[in-house]
Length: 188
Image 1 (cartoon, rainbow, N blue to C red):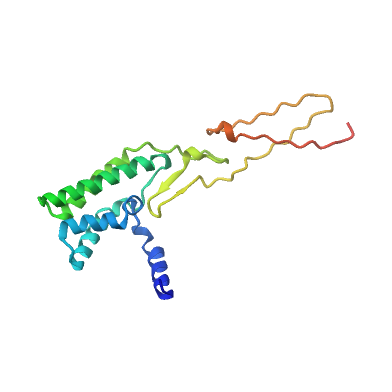
Image 2 (image 1 turned 90 degrees about the vertical axis):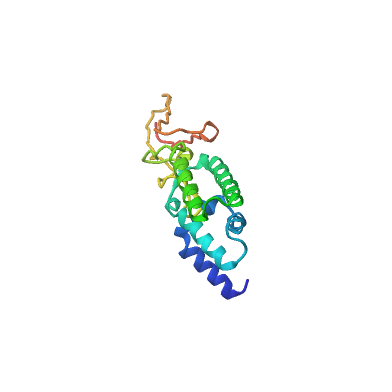
């Protein structure tokens, strides 16, 4: 790609990001092109119209956020949708714009029924179970909370026992739990 082509591609990536709906995360360009070719043939003008209709049908899904753990299931649903659209195109019983509208509505209902990620629990901590996948840019994100929880100082006289406990309001994976402490020597 030339320098100008790279700049144009970067511009499109930045300013079309809002249209990168779940459709773009879970289907490939080739899959979308194939669906349109099956519906309208190989004429570029008709393919462009078809692709615009396909993308427009999924516009409502552009800002969807889903439980990160549901990505594989949703990918499978989009794969099934692609196959179903190809079958509809082969039967030629309905126009592509109607088939796209129906497919988008079905997938929106599917997304709305996915298992929801639990909310982030303040004030701190890495909360993997609350990770969300954002269709707006095909990325995942954790809570916007500081990773380290507040430290509590404990004063213990020499020879006395100290009991350390860590209580948080969110799930901690056992393999990642660590404790640390510092001993500050003094005159006692």
